[in-house]
Length: 317
Image (spheres, rainbow, N blue to C red):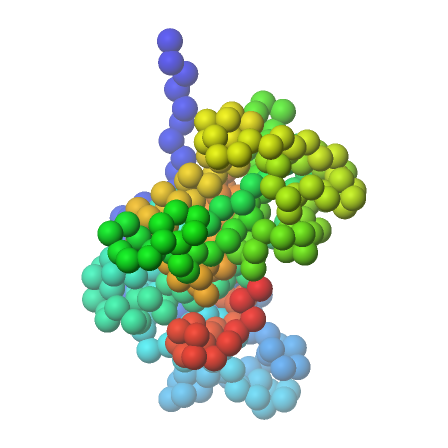
C-alpha cells in the first residue's frame, strides 16, 4: 500500500495574479519587504521622510538625501515594470528547471537581451545570498565539466572539448543515504591549489570525504579531513557505485543546463551554478522560495548589462 505524500503548497499562478497582477501591487509589496517598519534612510538611518511623487523618491528629513524604492536592489534604474520582474522571479523560484531567456522574453513580451539581463540579475541574487558553505559529516566530492563544443560542431568532444568549464561539486550524504546540502563552484582547473581553495571554503573541518583517485584530491587528509578514495579510471558504472550521490547531483545539473539552456558560457557559469544550488539547498522550503528570492533581490546591488555581457569585469566570486 502506497503512502500518501501531501502536495507542497506553493504560490499558485492564480494567487500570484491576484497579489502581484499590477505594478502598484508589486511596488507596495517591495516597499513592505525593504522597509517592513517604515522608511529607513540608507545614508543616515533616519526614520522621517517625505515622498516626492514627481521624482518617485523619498527625501530624508534629517540628511535631505533622496532615495528611490529600487535603489540598492537589482531593480535599480530598471525600465521594466515591477509586475514583469516579479513574474520572472516567480518563474526562476518555483520551476526546478528554471526559465530560459527565450521563454522569459515571450512570456513578458520583452526583447531577448532584456530577458537575458533580468534572468542574470536574479541569478546574481541567488548566488550572492546562498548561505556560507559548511558541509558536514560524510561528503562526496567529484569533478565535472560544463559547456564546450556540442555534438555535430567542429572541435574536440567530451572532456577535451574546447570551452568547457571545470566545476567542483560536493554534497553531504545523510545517515539514510539521502543527499543533504551541496556546494558547486567553477574553478580554473582540478589541480591542488584550486581543490584546496574549494575544500577550505565549502567543508567544515573533520569531514569524511569520499573521492575518486584524481591527483588533485590526494592531499585532502592534510587539510583536516578523513579521506577515502579509490582509483576508478574511466569505468562510469564503478564511479557511480562509489559516489552515487554526487554523480546523481552532477547528472541533474547537466540535465538542467542541457534541457533548459542547451549551453552556457564559462564566464556566466558562476550564476547558473548559483541558481541550481539555490534551489537545491532550499528544496524543502519550496513553499516560501518565492518570498525568499524577492528578499534576496532587494538585498542585492544591481549589475549593468555591459558588466553582465563581459564588457567590464565584475566580481562574480
